[in-house]
Image (cartoon, rainbow, N blue to C red; front, side, top):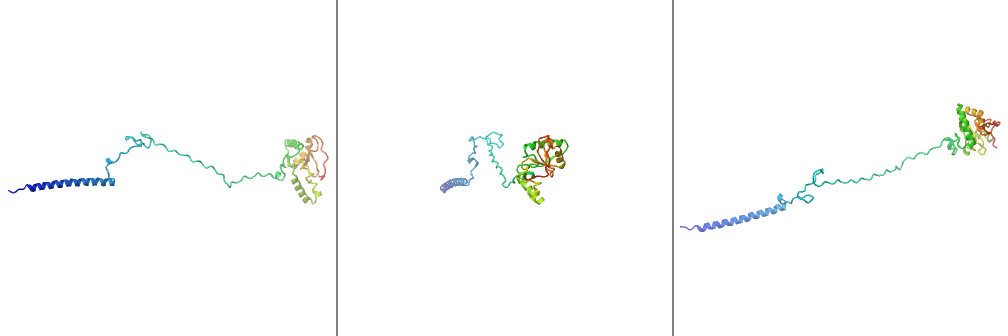
Amino acid sequence: MTNDEPPRRSLSVRARVLSVTGIALAASLLVWHGQVADFLGFGSAGDKAPVIGGSGAPDAKPPRADGDGPGTQLSKPTITPRPRPKPTKPTNAPKKPKPTKSPSTSENGQYDEESTEGMSPVLRSRLLKAMAAAKADGVALRINSGRRSATKQRRLLDEAIVKYGSYKAAVRWVLPPEFSEHVKGRAVDITPAAGAKWLELNGYRYGICRRYDNEPWHFEALVKPGRKCPAREPYALAE
């Protein structure tokens, strides 16, 4: 008989060594695999830390967008109103046109020549009464020229000199400013002709009389109301 025991024992030892070596190798592979997974971020779901809500409680529910559910409500954003810009005035805004004076006042200073403005109180009061009476009789009686400025009176005289050819002939129709009763507010020219005729016939009732033969439109307060008017003068005299 041959002795076979020694070889069997040698095989058993080899198997054990291989087993231990395999286990060590497997463990090394597992450790290496875990390190690689950690390095690459491939950790398992259980290894990750749980997400905790803003309130710090683990069971807190996240707030709903509509604010109706439990949880912390979202605060509404505050809107700061923007200041409205003040309206700026246009730099090239059109200027309002200045009121222009009527032809009767532009050259006649502050008086309206076709009104009782600037007349003496006596002439004005009497003329207004006469105009009211003429209106009651159905007669139009209007003022053509009342109070005049010295500037306009001088211009009228210059025009008369050109028209009649000399100063002497012109002053029969237009007196110089220093002699004119219009400049003093004590004379009035009446229009139309029918109105002037009515005043010639009835003016004495109010103390108003026609003064010159060559000017049927020219009237002055020459007498007391109700008195007879004096005889007319042929024309005006510069004196």
